[in-house]
Amino acid sequence: MNVVAPIGQFASRRDVATDGEHPRVVVADIAARPRSTARIITVANEKGGVGKTTLALHLAVALADTGHKVLAIDLDRRQQSLNRVLTNRDGTARRLGVRLPLPRHLVLQQQSGAMLCQEVARLGWDCDYVVIDAPGHDSPIGRRAIAMADLLVSPLNCSFLDLDLIGRFHPVNGRLLGPGCFAAMVGELRAAREEAGLSGPDWLVVLNRKRRETSHNQSKVEAALGKLAPRLGFRLGAGLHERVAYRDLFELGLTHLDLHRIPDLPRSRGVAAAEILQLLDDLRLEPAGPEAANVLPLQPAHLG
Ligand SMILES: Nc1ncnc2c1ncn2[C@@H]1O[C@H](COP(=O)(O)OP(=O)(O)OP(=O)(O)O)[C@@H](O)[C@H]1O
Ligand SMILES: [Mg+2]
Image 1 (cartoon, rainbow, N blue to C red):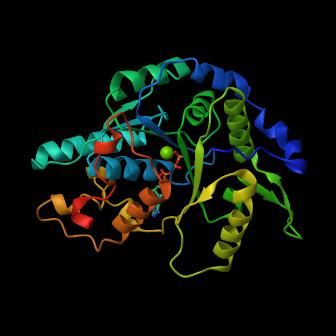
Image 2 (cartoon, helix red, strand yellow):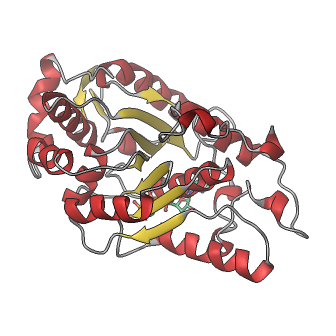
């Protein structure tokens, strides 16, 4: 895909991006290593608490639910939230004796590009998708996960605090000043990939915890993202609303996509499941792996 590099006044924001390891070094580290045929989806935003783990879980489960082999990698070795919820899921399937789609999962303990690629090759060699959950701060391993992604998914809350990491606007006249620190870093990594003869990653930005009633603040954030999308080269997804459904089954490792498989649990009204399916649509995933022509359509049978 064609990467939109920072232009004009945007170029002056290089300072924020080159704050960490140089993007060329990061890309060279990743590009030199053998990679599997699995498509890599990295869920990242260096802002904390925006819903990365929530999205990574639902994406991993939704992709597994459509018959794909999925490996989920948790880069946050301190919190390990994604790995814990998927471990709970394995336990729930065993205890209840139900057949749940079970993504493979691991925490990346040794945080190097070499180990990340090795784990993708070791556990993801026959997978269709690898879903990587990045920590809520800038880190060398987070940058590598973005640099190796086919698709980057970045959730953010409907707040100007969160928007500030994607784009900076003049507080009085609302004029666009440049990319925020996270977007600048993504731009630099994409430019480094292009220099190395690689394309992508494709980038989807998703508003999370949207309110049901339209608020002035939410409309302003949405308008700002609409302005930023063509400048920074991302697509804007339909987003997810604030719903208890995205967190109430954490201890069981379940999502509302699973409820039809569990006897005696109240059925979902389907709104959260429908939103996740919309998110899958927004990803515009190309069929994965060498047998791409034979993979199932991205639509769970029970919701078809
Ligand atoms: N759409 C949503 N509706 C309701 N609650 C949500 C939604 N998305 C996320 N949450 C809740 O918001 C909190 C933060 O979400 P999550 O842990 O997924 O964020 P994160 O970006 O992974 O955080 P970190 O940066 O710490 O890794 C959690 O309590 C989660 O259950
Ligand atoms: Mg998280």
